[in-house]
Length: 128
Image 1 (cartoon, rainbow, N blue to C red):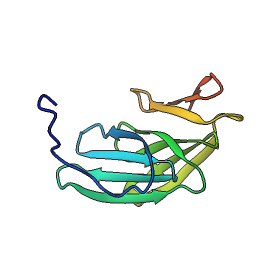
Image 2 (tube, rainbow, N blue to C red):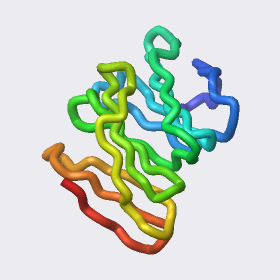
Image 3 (tube, rainbow, N blue to C red):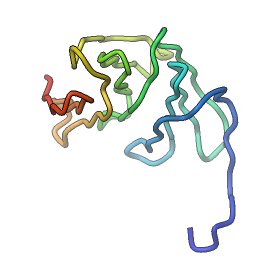
């Protein structure tokens, strides 16, 4: 960070990347894009581990749960999709979080038992 020099570059998304987050342990980075693609990267190996297409919606935000087993994705259609990273990205849960707006942010709480979403409707919601 001090020098401004690029150390690693990860290629694979074909459209705008909307969010990128570290896993709790710091070994992985998840990135999500405007095509509805979520990718998991191993930063030590500089390699792509997983690619998941969640369907015909943009993914605006993502967050790992505290175990690193699940990736929570907030989508432009107002849905939240929870991906099981360990099972190859299977969508284990999907729900409509914001009826008339895109999900713009997702956070998993410290106890790892709630997801918070913020939407384009000006509302923050808590989910169990």
